Length: 295
Image 1 (tube, rainbow, N blue to C red):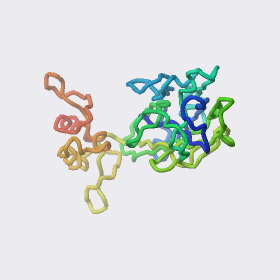
Image 2 (cartoon, rainbow, N blue to C red):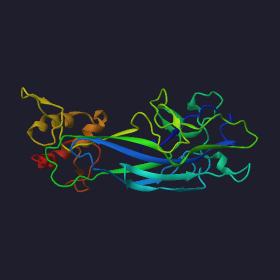
Image 3 (cartoon, helix red, strand yellow):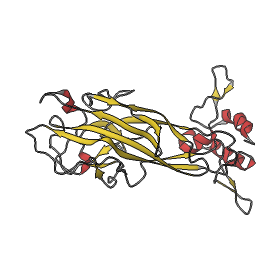
Image 4 (cartoon, helix red, strand yellow):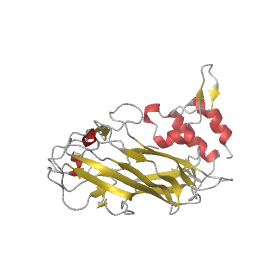
């Protein structure tokens, strides 16, 4: 799963947006809070801090120059339900012309009209965003989970030990007070800001939601025997009609949930059905779905 890791929203900024002010450190933790029968199952499998300039494929940031003097991915799956602990990235410009000034400059989304436009990555149809890091997750369930209802996890980003700060050219007008950071953004307004100088403070609203749900479990029956799109942790005849409905839905109209639940396989170059997903639910998936019945 790839999600925006951090957005910094500041009370004021240098004004030119590129060259005299930059994000100088991002210290970050990520905490999980799960509810459901598998509430201990989610784990972090990797955490990558992006370091390369540009906006091409791969580990590029959208910044006009590499944003960090150095970084570390921290520790994974630590006490306190921390998926990520003490990840660090720091920028220390050595001169007034250091390319680090052109790393993560302040974005215009803070609402201050004089701020720069920042990065180039497109979010909700608008540029001005950076790619900071990627967290990959695994649903590490063990044993028989048949009949388990879905388990939901809220993920919260926290200010880490390193803190989250900006640095200014000495002759530049500085922002006032402690760095204020919002980890979430709904396209219209940022989440409630917290102090970037206070390790352990976290966003009010969940920054990501992860649901563990059995593949193929489209639905169940209600008290009247009607099939409803409510998972029950089993794959059986209750799911067949909803699977068929998904197959009949044009590929471009299938939702992400439908694709997850029904995409079991594809065909190889010889026309054989193979258990390799292709992000589309069609007749290639029928035999594998039938095979999953009773799981």
